Length: 331
Image 1 (cartoon, rainbow, N blue to C red):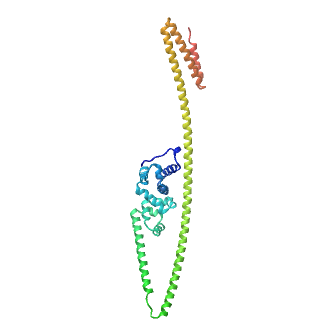
Image 2: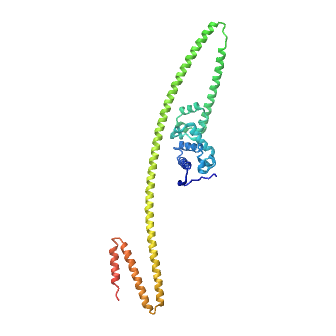
Image 3: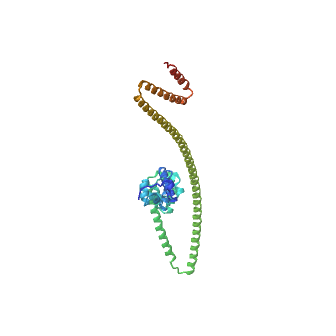
């Protein structure tokens, strides 16, 4: 079975409830892809890793993304790769998200050092302005440079091994030079270690500051989103109350219509009975008069009922008209 299936809320298991919630999360983030890139990446990863799609009526993750969201297999896994390569705090930044999925995926082909070099050298705005072709060329250049550096290091090691293996005729001189070389090398290694440690510490401090700023921004966005949802909830509640009031009015109108229909049916039945009596009456004119009189009485009762329903402004006018009508009857 590969069709989206939403179980009614009252019949859902905890797993189905979670699956429906995460499915709705994916739909929401898909509609806000620019600012919600990290959300859709994270939610798809959770649905795939925990096989939540099986609780939505799908046999495979690929069938779920294609049929439920129109997201192809490759695109879905690209979203997941982004969250795995960059992490949620990075993608929650609007500036980082606007770099573009294709360019971020291209940068992710580099190792950690290469990726960090690109992100430290160029701002998100600069990467956004670059075309995909330019980013690909940049990634290729960095990868080639790292390859060349690796080859250079290998050659340097070979040369050092060759020099270390040279034999000196003067053993004392050899020992002296060896100790001096070792001292120089130790000092060089110590200086490099200190420089690397200092650079790493500074990089970590900058990274922590950046993450703190992004976390603060994410918190603000979440708070704003919560306020919007609360406002929508209030609007929905107001609309629900209005609908209930309209439903009550409609019900009252239906009840009045039923009452009028019953009265009409009764009058019709009385009319038929009277007509039958007229046909059987020895004095048809008298029977007709009695029928008309009974009909007049029924109409007068209905008029009085309707009169009582009028507002205060309309009653005096209708009362005057009714009295004029009744006073004008003379026999």
